[in-house]
Image 1 (spheres, rainbow, N blue to C red):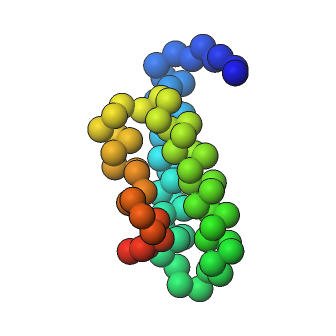
Image 2: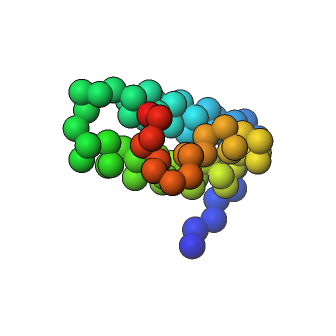
Image 3: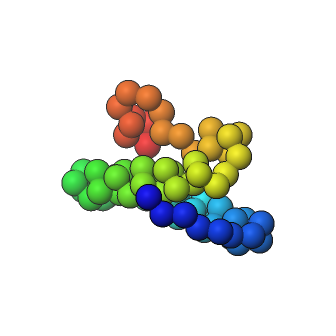
Length: 76
């Protein structure tokens, strides 16, 4: 386990970068031209980013970026 000290400005920058990257992945998952294996890798990356996001963002912000339960690709 690692620890990190950051100030509020740095925290907000991390949140912004994570949200931006997750938004991009969600947008790309809607593209029907991307192969399923690539989409699975993108979903794994999203889960990793979301785990980091949960550590720094408020609960209400996290709810906006949660994958739906069950078949995660449904509706994307």
